[in-house]
Image (cartoon, rainbow over all chains, first blue to last red; front, side):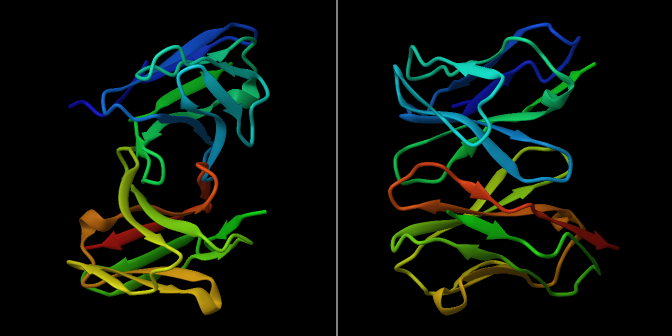
Length: 111
Length: 114
């Protein structure tokens, strides 16, 4: 039982490049989330999903896209990377009403 | 709107001291859930506790204890006899009863010095 896994662990992008952050969970959780954590700050919700095929915006969705084609996977897409997207990205999953379990994070730098 | 305030940005104590991390929340929901997470230097987020709004009983787990007071909208976390391994950033978070989104405080960086 690996829990929530994220790839890659680190990535450096140039301005304007695109990339997909991968997130997979093996706990059969219905709910999945993407957060970003800026230095010295708490986590802010980017997008979340309550099940396959259903996604919704969080607090800071601009510049990102998501899809949820399976229960296990919830990739986060950055289309045109900007320096403001330099952050640590966490994926999480949960069952309804329960605590969220977090992945190890992806540290992204945009130069 | 929901909000979580952790007024203590950084705390530094000597090992074996007791330390309390404060958390104050705002919500209009009558049903809600409060959480504490630990983020050690390695960066992952570790779930510590969940408390729902109908359960004001304090909880103790080893050296950790939590004090939930609805009257003051607070959910404070105390570490007794602190250890160096307790050094981490601690986050308090709130989830409204009808939502699945967590609202995090800004975190308190706790440093335990030997």
